[in-house]
Length: 110
Image (cartoon, rainbow, N blue to C red; front, side):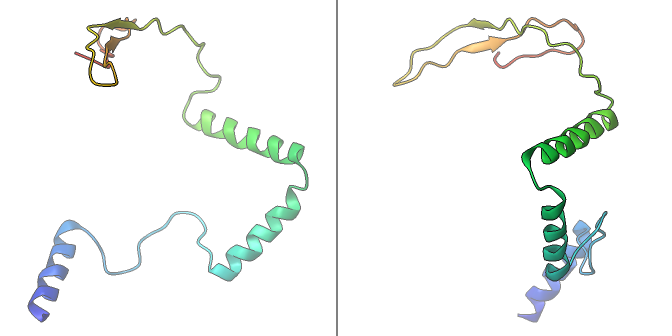
């Protein structure tokens, strides 16, 4: 049994897993502190409108951080479907999107 344990621990060390506590970014709460934090946040958002305003600020912050704000204009997809094959109860079809950027192929089929 101890040989298997040693082998297992060796595998963990070789794969980069750590027996020590992992580094976690942000706040990590104990269950008691987490419950208190949730109760505090429940008081902060007493109605739907206040939560929607906070959600919009969070969403915009994520989009700005990803450099996607404002979002690019939406364009029609215009999929091209071809080579349907009738199967038992379903029909798979190859599909592709006419690409506007020649170096980035986009396809869902052959």
